[in-house]
Image (cartoon, rainbow, N blue to C red; front, side, top):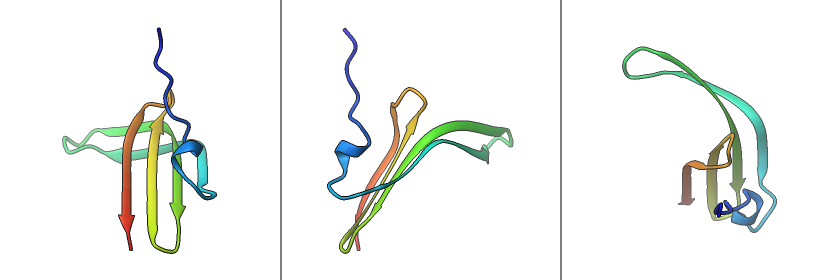
Length: 68
């Protein structure tokens, strides 16, 4: 049985900015060029900022919650 991953929208209470199928690229610590397609969710509110990056299979690669 496959476990359902949370929707990027269900993790935010307001209206996040979502970038679907965005390609991010960087140079690794070993000097290799890396490119990956991701989904990015960003919500900046009056007191908090939330960021989530998912891979193409909607697995969480990174998430962060900051009070500002």
